[in-house]
Length: 397
Image (cartoon, rainbow, N blue to C red; front, side, top):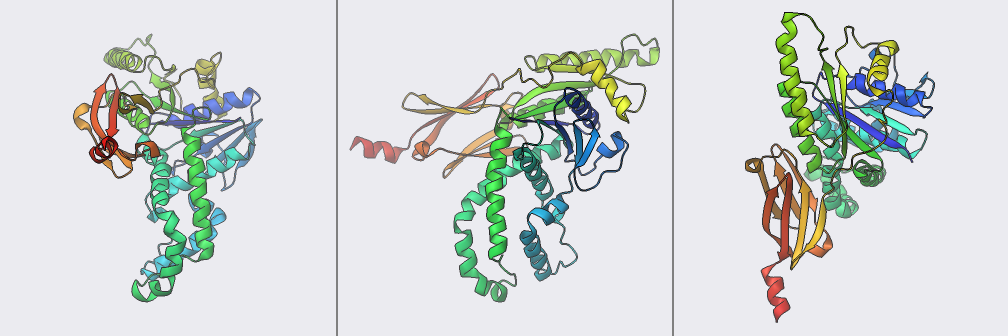
């Protein structure tokens, strides 16, 4: 079975260089490797000093291919009838000059992920290494399949019926045209792919998320927040990379205070992420551009280390039988209790942490249960479910 390694972090911390170094090491181990960029500001071509097209660039190095995903091109090739429908819809809405999918929030990220899942399922590569956009966009990218899948689960069962009923009147009454049968078939295909994608990203035997940081205050704080958000959405983080560490032997008074600050932030990161594999990457005296420059990271940091072996397993959210009901445990390290909220909405539990919220569909077993208590302890949120009052009363009679 292949594996996917997703590299993310605050903008400017060196994610692309770290991801590229792993790709080179993987290829040198004789593993068929694909290095993918989902960042709209692609720079893999710059790093490897070659012009990349819309398709996979084969054999950049032995066992290594590169791919800078163009989501518009992916949609045109894989979902042509959805594209055709959207163009007609934009035209009906007086937006004939705006058929780009980027107009729809999250769509670019979605099609990038769908393409990665498609490539993974073809089993042409043993390792797929993903250079993601800065963490805010990455979080949007990773949560989008679950979010959109949730909406489609609610709407899709009536989708085809709705099209059949509303199509004759939609143009006249709403001034827009409903998707035709071919577009609906594409939407159905997309729905099935979304379900596969969500399972793929949450599968700890397949997908790892690795965070690249730097020893700076803002980066350290954002790294802790992003680790919490990734746990909220149940992704498996199994590595922290501290990049651009100044050498301690610098004999220059200008850097002395920097060295003291960096030492403090490195200690902070190590204490915060104790138990996770942590890799330290030095500050280089040259721009990391070109294969030779990237190999410096491989030789200085990755050689002799099992960087592709998953040695850490984070806790998944899980339900446990508890007294007369059930308890759900959700790992939220570094979350602040005052910034957390939760409520039950029909058959979903909604958890909010900071600026992010997640809908967790409840299993059928809990359809007649309600939240009766919640405790946040040692980085884990414990939520108690018990049978609703009406259910209890009916059971007693």
